[in-house]
Image 1 (cartoon, rainbow, N blue to C red):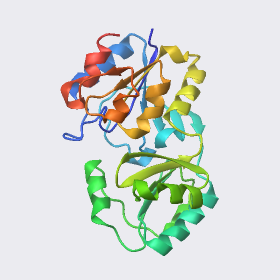
Image 2 (image 1 turned 120 degrees about the horizontal axis):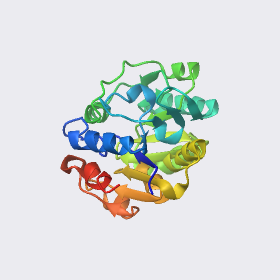
Image 3 (image 1 turned 90 degrees about the vertical axis):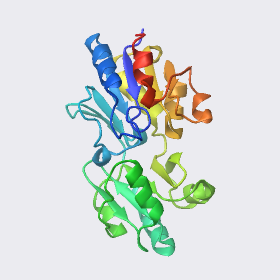
Length: 258
């Protein structure tokens, strides 16, 4: 019996076409919550970038790809900021390369780009329906706890970046132009374990929905992993069930069976 369901946001709950949650999903989630099933968000977005949940009813948030977890009323269950040494190395790397990086905490996020923003950065923020933040000096990232480093480098640069710059971080990629980096050991699967321990729920009683590369750990880990129809083949191969796309009532089609 499923007692808790975890949902990714972008491409899972929220359509990239409409930037909203389909009404069918809102209704289905409301229905399962009325039966006592808990509903948690599990997103790569940090807290300042969560702007698209609308009227969704939910119980808590896993944010920054698992680095921060809190209930809807603000009780923090887990929070692990990025090591300051990694932030310092990232800042130095930016000054030598001009790399664009967003540093996101729980109450503040800054965009930094020593040589200015590229068109790719603007396209990503447009895709997510987030206004591009005002540019700041990279050094300002040392003034607050950074939960997630959102760095604009491509997959071929990942080995160098993770071995030499973000040494204490792991990366999760769902878009070719950027990567979400959080403290090693933090991901959506490890966050699920912390949430179910908080409630006393068994892993076999969990379900997770996702569509991107950063959802793979939780789809493999949950009692039932559901890949959206719009997910890549790699993601679908890691799921127990493949539903229809977010725009084709993919969530409602599964939840109505609970």
